[in-house]
Image 1: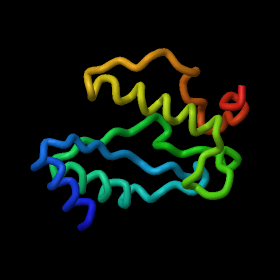
Image 2: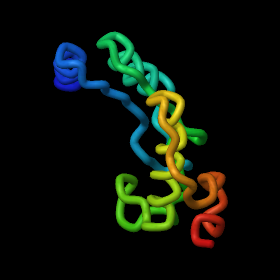
Image 3: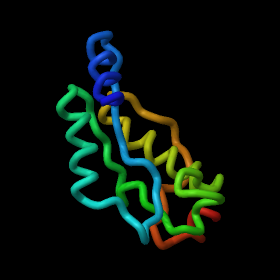
Image 4: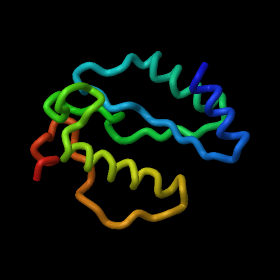
Amino acid sequence: AEIARFLRWARAHRVRAIGGWPTGFADSPMPDATRAAIRAVYAENGAAFLELPGRSLYPRRAFFDSPDHLSEPWQIAHSWALARALEPVLGERVSAGPRPLPAPGDAEAALR
């Protein structure tokens, strides 16, 4: 209810809200029904929703203390992937950055 209220406020004040999945462990994904319910809150309240490849799921070793805190190399890669995904939504181009987000099982690629 709180997120829905915020999304309605944002729309009424011409603030563009774009939702997305929180980061999480690839071996413990959120149930599909939960994902559908979250996405529906955004759609029903006039907000966009952006899904990154891999649904923002990463191997456990990509995190430093919880599923909410990616280690720095993975956070950088995730942020760049998010920026690139937002380009078509926002109609702006981001500058060149690091390589694309590594595959969920490829932690070493994020560290290179």
